[in-house]
Structure formats: structure tokens, C-alpha cells
Length: 92
Image 1 (tube, rainbow, N blue to C red):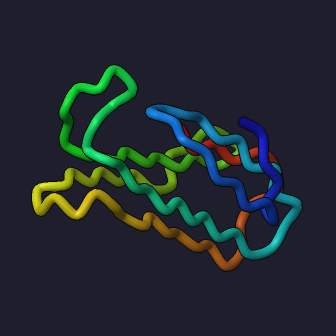
Image 2: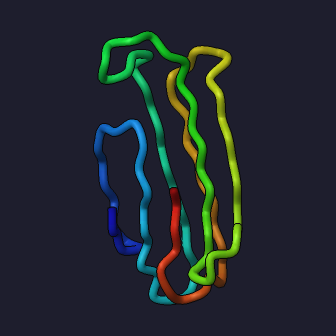
């Protein structure tokens, strides 16, 4: 999915890769995640989120894993870089 740095999107999915076209300056990545506790096949699952942010050169910038052990079914991943490199950032 291709988004610009100023876009805000909402969708239901179990997995995704986001490509962020960043012009220059500050970059803020905000990924609010929520989960009903069942997948599309109606199987009970525990919510989890894996977020890995790569810069335009493919270098790992931030790696994060959350597993919902407290059954909150939601989490907000946020990361901000005040002076981010211009180009396509990847969030798989």
C-alpha cells in the first residue's frame, strides 16, 4: 500500500506493507491497531503487532513487537524522526 507522509488511512487487514513517500523534514509514523480477537476464518487468536521501519536505503530504523497478553485488543505504535531522509520508507 502506497501512502504519502501526510495521508491517514483506515482499513481492516491481517497483514500489510506500507510504503511512505516522505519529501523531507520530520517524519511521524503512527499505527493504531485494534483486533476483535478473531481472524477472518473466525478462529480465536491473540492480538499481536509487528512493526519494522526501514529508511529509504533499506536500513532498519525501528523494530517493535507487541503481544496482547492483557487482552486489551488495541495498541498504538508511534515513532517520530525530527530530520528524516527523503525517499520511500517501508513499514512491513
